[in-house]
Every structure is written in C-alpha cells, then in structure tokens.
Amino acid sequence: MSGRHWQGLSLLDVLRPELGMRASCAVLTSYSVDLVALVASLLALGGLDDDRGSGSKVDLAQAVEQLRGRFRVIAQSGRVQAPAKSPKILALMDQFLREVQSDEQVGSWHPKLALVRYEPVAVDAALVSPANNWRFWISSRNLTRDMSWDAGLLLTGKAEGSGKVLPGIRSAAEILLERAQLELPYPALLRELETLRWLAPDGMDVEDFELMLPESGGRGLPEPPRDIHDVMVVSPFLDPQTVEALGAWGTEGTRRRLLSIGEQLQMVATRKPRALDGFEILGALDAPETGAELCGAQEAEASQEIIEDTSEQELEGQGLHAKLILVRHGAGQTLWLGSANATARGWKGPNYEAVARLRVPLSVFQGLETLMDMGRPFKVESGMAPVEEPETRRELERARNQVANRWQVIHRVEAGGSKLATTVPPHPDHAAIDLSVGLLGHPLMKWERSQLELSIGSFPVSELTELVRIRLAYGEDQMEWLQRAPLDPPPSVERDRQAIARHLDARIFLLWIRSLLEQGEVFEGGGDWWNEAPDRAKGRGGRQRAVGWAPTLEDVLRTWTRSPETLIDADNKIRHYLKIMNEMDPSHRSVEERETLAEFWKVWQILAAEFIPARESAS
Image (cartoon, rainbow, N blue to C red):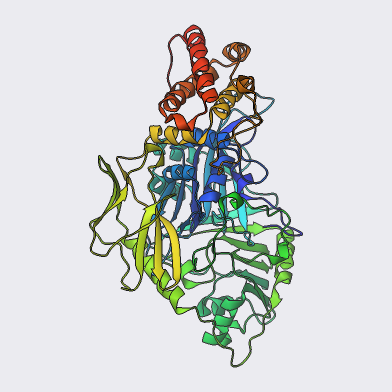
C-alpha cells in the first residue's frame, strides 16, 4: 500500500534476495492464487525477475532448478486460477502449490503471509553478512495480479541485532512448514527461528501476531484501547454485527470512519441500517478484481498479454482489498493489520486468518487518512434495495465449493495413458451443472456423474502435471479454476528437465550454460517465459549464426580457476539436458541446432574429463 505518508513495497520486492544471498526456504500463503503471479514470485525469489515482474525462458528454468523442493504456496482449494491460454511450461508449477480443503460455506483458508529464509552464496564482508536471515510478510494481498489497495508489513529476522522476539512466529511457522511439505529439515528451521530477533519498520513496534485457526479459543474483535480519539476501519467485506461493534468503540466524542466496497455498505444498510450509525464518515471504493472466473461470452486474455504493464494505471481507480483497524488514543496509535475482514468469520472464526497488532507513529495515521479521502461518500437512504447476486452466480459458487471439497482425485499414469480416478464423485449436487476436466494446457472433456475414472489421453512426460483444469457449465454461464490431482507416480526431476528442454532451443540452452560459467546475465534469455515459439536466430547464413552460442575454452578455464563448483553445476545441466535434447523428435530442432549440439558435446566431454575427472554429480 502506498500513499502520501506510506512507504510503497511490492510483494516481489519483499521476496527478492539481497546481493550475495539466495532463498533457501520460502512459504507463501494466500486465499486465491494466479499461476502467473506464482511464476513472478518464483522468479523474484531466485533474484531473476525483471522490472515487469516477469522474466525469460532461461530465468524460469534457472528458478525451477534453484527452488525445487524449497518453495511452496498454500492456497484455498478451488481458488487457483490460470490464464485462459496456458503455456505448457506452467505444468511445472504443480510442485510449488499445496491446497487447503476448507468448506467455504463455513470458513476459508484466508491468511496472506510470506516466510522466507535466505542464506549467503559467498562470504564477502564487503558485500554481505555471512549469517542467514529471514523475512516475514504479513498482509492482505492475495497472490494474484489484482492491483487493488492492499496493506502489508515486512519484518526482518536475524540471530543477532537490536530486534525483538516476535510472539506467535514459531507456532505459525510450524503450521506453515507442515502444510507446505517442503523437502527440508523442519526441526532445524524451527530451532533457528527461535533464535531470531525481528526488526520492524522505523517507528513501529509489533506487540503481537497470531495465525488464527478455526479451533483457536478466545477469538473475537480485539479489546479497544482507552481514551480513543479516532477510529478508522478499512475492510472490503463486512457484516452488520461486526460493523456495529466497531462503531461503538470510544465515546461520544470519538470520530469514527469506515471505508469499504459500495455494495457491502449497501448490504449492511439494508439488513441492519442502524449498524452504520456509529460512523461519522462512510466511504466507498470499488471491489477488488476477481479474475476471469465467469467466462460467458467474454474471452480472457491471450497468452501474449499474460504480463500487463500497470505502471501507468491511475491509483485512484484501484479497488479496495486492504484490511485495517487503526485507532488514535491517549497513549499513541494502535494498528491491527492482516487478512481479517470486518466480519465475524474473520475475527471470531472459523476462517484461518493472520493478524498483527502494532504501535505505529502518527505518520501512519495521516497516511491512512489519505486513503480514506479517496472513498466516495456513502449515504444511508430509506428504501435502499440490497444488491442481489445473479442466481447463476450463486449456484455456480455453491457448485464450486462442493467440487473443491469433494475433490479426492488421483492422476494415474499407466501404459495406456493418463486417467483421473477417485472413490468419491466430485460432481456438484445441482443436476443441471455439468463438470468438465482436463490437464492444464489441454482440451477439456465432460466427466459423467456415473464415472469414478476418466481416461484423459496420453501425454509426453514433459506435459504430465498435477494441475487439472475444471469447468462448471450452467446454461450459458461457466466457471473455471485449477485443482491439484496428485500424480501417481509423483512428478520427478526428469519431468521438469524434459519440459524445460522442450521450452528452450539449442541456442538459448548454450547461452544459458555460457552465462553460468561467466557468472553473468544472459543478454537474451530466449524471450518471455510464456512464449512457446522457438527463439530462432534471425536471418540466414548457415553455421556462422552458431558463433558465440557455446562456451569457449577460455570460459571453462576461468570458471575452473575461480569457481570449480560452478563448473560441476554446468556439467550436470549439460549432461542431463543434452541427453534429453538428443532424444527429442528431430522436428523440434533445426539441422544447424543438431549439428551445433553434437559438436559442443564432443568438445565438452574432452574438457570435462580434464577438469572434472570425478564427474561429480548433483541432481
């Protein structure tokens, strides 16, 4: 969130490692997830993203190699979205995703957190401290491309320093790591967390943090401070009882302001008009974007529009998604910040929520006043009608929740092809709503209600994925999302390398190896990561175009003297990827590419035998 008195900091800035550091463990939580935003987070954690929050094919390949088994996003089941035209390389994102099956008719998985550990890649006192450090991000931001107003808090943790112990961090981390199922030693990570001291932004003091679970006892709105002068509540979603309770904070002389979505204020005004009486000022902003969930006659974005330039968007036109309660009182300013809306589900349960309580400087109060001023004045009027949701939307949302919670589907790969198998039918109750499914990036087929198994076709190893695209159709309206169906057998490193090898052409692969040896950036990374077209060198002229693709003898000698482990890493990639490329259908490679790869492999075998005699391997 940014404003006149607020520091702007994007989630990608939060995730990106400092110079000389790398992310060694990362868990993000979100209610909803957009796969394109997940890729952006993956690239940022690898320090490989560009100024658009995107990257090249080589950047994505390097990020997958670097963060495999170390990064997970935990999201609400039924709330994972993909672009309408999905590049096949997105199939690899299944390994970075885990879902929580929570019945949304009752409560949701709703926290928005990022817990990341960084470790040094080289000890150089002039560049970086040799110690590990952590970052903890508490916010209202979903992992999507929505540009609505959000609020977040970044804390940095180190074993030594002037910070303080953060209440609740150890228990929250244990829950997140357990659900993330990372390939890392959890007990050691938790012991390290217990030694950390956390620094908040200047002038702020974190007094409490809690990851609230459905079973957490004593949940409810916080106790209001004494001697309250001002109350400001920012919440896109409301319920009359919670709004009325917040409107009673303070005394007759207390100034209270509420900023929400216009439809939500109208809903409260029609259900319980007096609930808004405690607020002197009511402001309305637009609802946050929800993604292309109801397709109907509209087409979602094309693949070439997968990354949108939002730098010139008018901030005043953004929707509202921040969740805040800020109170100015006799002893200072207290802020509650996190994922909980001003609703009973958020504060009392049974939603999963994350909330921090902070003591903040007056500048934060002044910054929030700036946001409050952006809201359109809302006035309660007699005879105001509630905003009714279309019946098809209600039925499709109910069906989505049923399918997401009944989904116990396994993706089995057998000699005859792939099939989706379950012992519990995932279909919605509504008989007129049809269910169609298909692997991400492939056509859908209808799943009849009587079927417990559905054959979905044969796929190359590179296109096998746990991500299943689901479509519900009700008349002319449709709703789509992704659901995870665990692979049997599970996805392997070989699957990832097959997919990456098919995503890169020979020129870009060799430039990637050269950049690894030179420990520099690839000038061309094969084009944008989502572009599935091969990145052929321009013009004609036969073999002369191959000059400069492959590493030179000088590159190898410099790497051997400066960083032998980098040479081993390059050797591993060459042996794995060249084998796959040589086994691919010849139609995937031009004659020039095949000849260049063959010549490079002959030369590399000689160099590797000389400089890597043990042929050390790190898969």
